[in-house]
Length: 213
Ligand SMILES: Cc1ncc(COP(=O)(O)OP(=O)(O)O)c(N)n1
Ligand SMILES: Cc1nc(C(=O)O)sc1CCOP(=O)(O)O
Ligand SMILES: [Mg+2]
Image 1 (cartoon, rainbow, N blue to C red):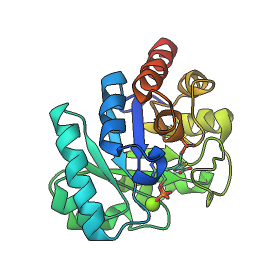
Image 2: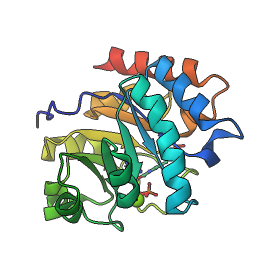
Image 3: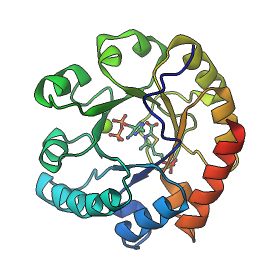
Image 4: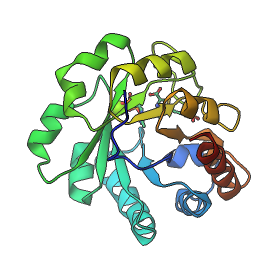
């Protein structure tokens, strides 16, 4: 199925303070953007809402400077108060249809798909793009169910026109394969946040993605 063109982003950085190896996440995010990241998600699983909001506001000052959309993971209160571009939720979070009722001014809603039957739900219908969760199992997030693999990307591509985000152990060795299998965008934590040079890592991934399109 042909992908929806409303999601033009190709390289998606998912970031948290804990994933940045003691480095300043604002520096990591800025370097990644300079290297070619074109959408950023703040995923803070350990912080309360006040601390999450403070970090999100600091990060938004950086992403706004470069015209890069900022997505908030899970926390609708933070996303709304911040005026974020969007929110990403999974199967055990607030459902997209409820988010749309509360956050009415055109937010973007990403939704994780963990199993084939979840593609055909009212909540999937209510979302703007889908996280393929995970393409490969990863130490960064261990509460996942199956591995989709590149064949899984191909199967999902045949069944939906929603933009597809490949996430889970994505890196320089598999990004091009995921794009060729039908993903629209590659999302990473470690491949950028753990790299010696987040800027160079992002630039290499972006080139691999662009060459695979
Ligand atoms: C782009 C993207 N895809 C998938 C996820 C995972 O979301 P979720 O299943 O809600 O898990 P947590 O990130 O909340 O642990 C994501 N965050 N981003
Ligand atoms: C945030 C997230 N969501 C996933 C999912 O499967 O839904 S995997 C993941 C973390 C991805 O980290 P890394 O790039 O280090 O593998
Ligand atoms: Mg979640």
